[in-house]
Structure formats: C-alpha cells, structure tokens
Image 1 (tube, one colour):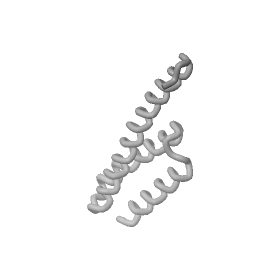
Image 2 (spheres, one colour):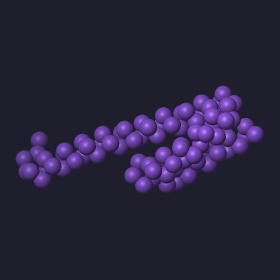
Image 3 (spheres, rainbow, N blue to C red):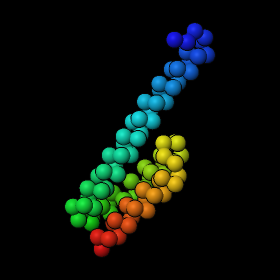
Length: 87
C-alpha cells in the first residue's frame, strides 16, 4: 500500500477512472448488441433508429479513450454494411 499522499491520490483517481471507463464500455457494448439484434431480426426500422445513437456513442468513446479510432471505424463500417445488406 502506498504511503505518500500523492500516491494515495493516484490510487483513488485510478479507481474512479477505471469505474467510469468500465461503465462507458459496458454502455457501448450493450448499444452495439441492440443494433446487431435489430439487424439479425430483420427489423429495418428499429435498426435504422439505433444506428445514429450507436455511432454517436462510438465516436464519444474515441474521444474518451475507450476505443482506438481504427477499431471504432471498423465497428461503424461493419455495422453499416450489415444494415445496407437488409435493403
């Protein structure tokens, strides 16, 4: 266990940041699952409605450092391709 006040503060900051990142990552994964479920069930209207909020959440996770920008681009590309395949 750390003894210095600065090290204790760092531990506290890390815990808070880790929890925040975990919550955001979970939200992102759940949103992507909802969109994939809508696409798999051939519900084009629901999938179309979920597409923009999902992309917004993906973009937000890039800014927060949850996702790498190339991984985010890959997610967005594959999801939009699946949606276009419904048409």
